[in-house]
Length: 149
Image 1 (cartoon, rainbow, N blue to C red):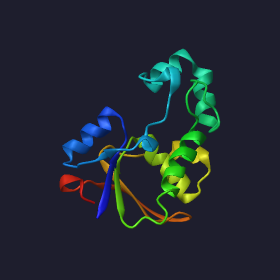
Image 2: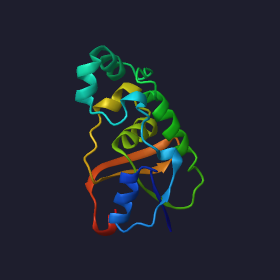
Image 3: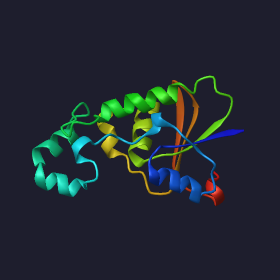
Image 4: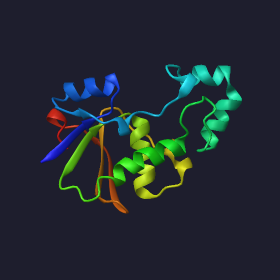
């Protein structure tokens, strides 16, 4: 049996429903908190605050927007991933691209600055198999019927 989860955002919940998944919201899988930049495009923020954006993109510890740093996101989502140790099944989660990147950074032990180097295509499946401390990655697969891997 598999556990089906979704990030609490409206778009993740709607995507899960569109895929035919009965998914339970998981607060630990919420998107990066962009603080006062929430709702703005990167282009809009870069035009208004170029130095702050440059700092944010270069330093995983930085949160010039007053929200969550990339490192904090990776730590939070990584803690959730590590909590699955000893689980007895598969977990399917519909999450934001930033959460996928953060989970991959954590699972593979990548340096946090690698976060910005990972592209996550919309409506794709990224798979982590294994267990805490030893994850294998399979990324970018298109979704099958009803979100089946």
